[in-house]
Length: 114
Image (cartoon, rainbow, N blue to C red; front, side, top):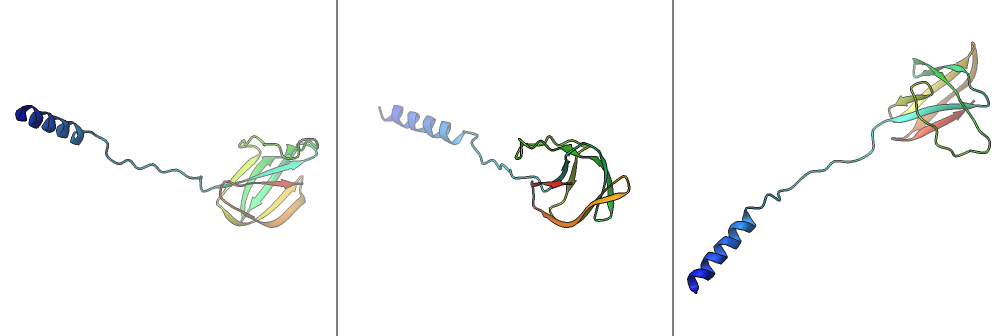
């Protein structure tokens, strides 16, 4: 009987120590970028200057009854930036429509109304 208990104890210890549980590292968080999107009453082409870098974009038509709607981010209507303070100026057909210093935090989409 002693022999069976010893063998069973050894078998249980071998099974428990042989598990491949280990420790796993999972990294998650938000991307370190912010976005600028421009809205107006009509859709038109604009030239955006952010800290001396020029982008050609298009405005997104603002719908009065959908004030807090999600705007689909595309390469034509959204600019990706590093979080922080930026100097932004917007012109359309040679006329300056917007010029201001803005602050954007990580994962924030700043909507600029023209």
